[in-house]
Length: 104
Image (cartoon, one colour):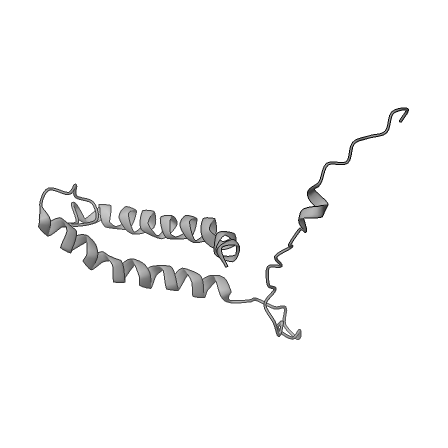
């Protein structure tokens, strides 16, 4: 289970960072935005920061939905299944070092 989570960990990290950076850049036009562009000075900042979580989650969902739209050429059928990542399990015996014979 941990291996499956790790397969997507970097992708999730990079996409959420992209959404956060895009939101911060968009907010720069309106000056200091509490909780997003201001430094943590008091306990109110944490409440302001938590208020941004639903906004950022909605933006991340929009990016995800936009990325899942499949474009097909006119007159062709859309794919019926999305490709899935395969997890290859290597048995421990395959990782054993076999010494080379002399003379080779």
